[in-house]
Image 1 (cartoon, rainbow, N blue to C red):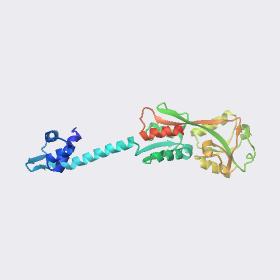
Image 2 (image 1 turned 90 degrees about the vertical axis):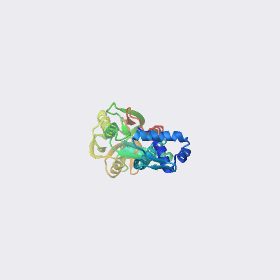
Image 3 (image 1 turned 120 degrees about the horizontal axis):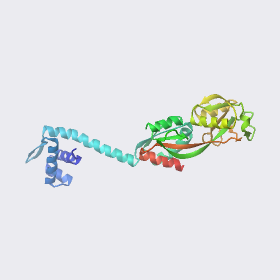
Image 4 (image 1 turned 45 degrees about the horizontal axis):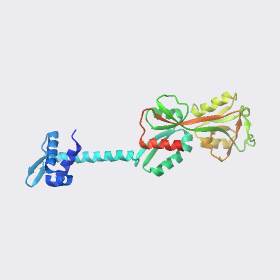
Length: 291
């Protein structure tokens, strides 16, 4: 492929009208510039200039090369600038996904912190269950996923993020709300608002209750923690939710400690193994793990 420096030299001559002026602008000797022009004509198999004592005039082929070549050089320069901007994180897109807890309570502050340093980076965030997020990472629809472990594929790299306690919440009017804590057996035959099945967090909660030998009635399934908290606050149902999502002073509900039952989940960042991350995505991972 013809070196773009030959095309740039040709465009300078076409703009200047003389080889002498173009050579001065390019900081080349006239013979060196003439050799470049001859090389370009040889590569293209066409005469691009008609030379005279007054300077040079473009042939029909030369005018075509000037028109298309200018566009080619501009697009190449734009390509280089774009790549440089991504590498320096002046611009770029980070595509990531996570469950309701991560999207609602973990990512907003992290993205805000990141964008204060890199305002040109755009985040595209998808909310989905852990298994769907894992599949999106594998199929490269997103670069990063935040999930509840375990994962099902060896083709993803798992970067531990944080442990999250799963706690019981009740409305402040519930008969159990006046207690400082309850034993797990007090949950027998209680009505629960659960996460959608078969989400990772729902499987974790169901497994822990089954192991404790407690039977509950899941009378409703919801996707997000805010919706679950509002439903619990308005009904006599209980719910197990992420401590991260509940916060310190949840409105309308209270966290009720349960002895004989401990439910925790390990949250992690997923990336596709052996797939390089964009500079912005790689730095965002570091920010998340430090936070």
